[in-house]
Length: 396
Image (cartoon, rainbow, N blue to C red; front, side):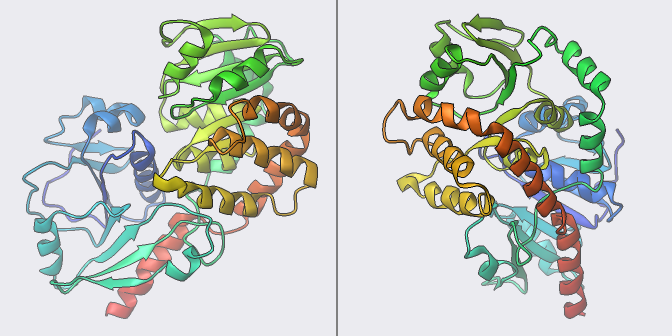
């Protein structure tokens, strides 16, 4: 860790408001680190909730929020009030329409060469994304123009976050049995039977969890459930008949073994995904990382009023399952719909599980093919840097 002069002007400046636990900051921290790692210029990240930042970036806990500091090549600053007057970055990114401080907008407008202003949007597989990606929006009062940058799954979008060395790191982990065994032993997980299904569960609250847990308890194949600290722990505790679940707890219920893991940084979470046979993920950041893990996964999409999230879920399923064999595709779609509360009955999860479990070998192969197709395209940072360079060239 180190400290930078407060008036230094970075190449990249990212603003993040923590809205839903770790999703927003997870994406922003990953983006900031990737930009810094690639040597794309100095990076400054503003975060309004320092405690949440410290959960995914443990070194930040040792920093004074009022002073900030540098971790992994990224200058970390607390976004508080009043906001300081300082030179804005050459590229200013407001993540997920978080609205920049007025004093900073004024500073941006006062620059001789005004910054490139980017609104980094939420990820969606919907068709309309291609038509909105890259659109410009002039500020109503100031001589500034904001451009909308949409992550996505095709060439007409902003792509997905993927560090240059991510797939090589995954291959090294997956291809080294001794390393995987050591990883399990370090976490006290070496007890499981060799033929058990290792499942990670990172989820929001899940009212239907009891039905699925019941299917695992009485199933023909042992299930080893690894649960990092998250909002689902309360539902899981009630399902298992205990008052609470804490880090380090280990329970056995029939064919189901459950172990609660501590919350980890992003690199540690990647390894958890790589170490498991099936991953339950939520939101946006873990959703994308599950795809780069090239393993079967189940996505719990962030719920929206009026079930607006169903269109987003269906749009991704349409893309993801294109070309998949009919039976495995139907099994995956049924479980995903039930997991997100769109099942025909409370028992829908238990009813969908046997077909999904039978389809896992085919879904494993499909997940690898999907990852390979995604990796054939350019990642988000590559597309973002080119997009910003184009805007700067036009501005000159």
